[in-house]
Length: 279
Image (cartoon, rainbow, N blue to C red; front, top):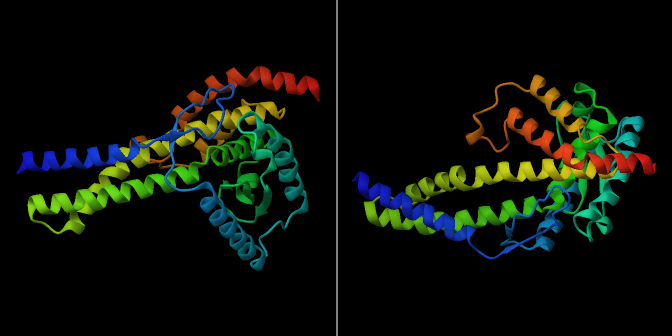
C-alpha cells in the first residue's frame, strides 16, 4: 500500500511538472539586477488586465463610500510624487509600461499594505505610512517592489499556475481514485495540496525575490536610496511577529530577504549615485 501511494504521489508530481514545462515567455528585460526567469503563461494579459481594472474600480468605490479614499491631501500628494518618479523608470524593464493607465490612491486603513495590480493600478495604505514612519526612500522601496510585480505580470503567472495545477489535480485525482478505489474528490485534494506546497508556494517566494530585486533598481534609477529597502524590512521585522516557517510561507523570511537585498542594493547603487548627480 505504501509503495502504491508513493507511485501515485510521484505521478502527481509528474503531472504538476508537466504543467510547468509548457512554453515560457519573458515579460521583462533583465535590468542591472539580472532577472531573467522564463514564465509560463496560460492566461492572456488582456483578460487579466481587464479583470484587474474592474476590481480596482470596485475597491476604490468601496473606499470612497466608507470615506477612506485619499482623506489626507498631504499623504496623497507624497505618494503620487514618488509614483511619478518611479513610473518612467519602468522603461528599463519593458518599453510598454510607461504607457499603461497608471493610477495611485491612498486608502485609510491600519493594515501594513500596498499593492499594484496588473496594468499599473496602485494603492498604499495609511497604516504602512504611519505605523512604520516611512521615509520617501523607504516608500519608494515599497512602491518599487509592488510595481515590479506588475511589470513581471506575477498576477497573470499565478492565475496560469493555478489553472495548470487545477488541471493536474483533476487528472491525478481521478487516477489515484481509480488506483486505490477511493473518491476522486479526495484524490484531487491530495494532488492540490501537493501542488500548492511543492510548486505554488516556492515559486511565490521566487516572485517576491524578483520583485525585491527589480524594486531596488527602480528606486535607484529614480534617485531613491536602494539601501532604504533594507531599513524598511528591518522595521517590518520589528513590527510583524509570528511568521510561519519559510518553506510554508509565500514570502521569504525577513533574514533571507534582507541578505538578498544587501547584495542587489549594492549592485544598483551606482545607478542611484548617477541619478542623484543628474537631479
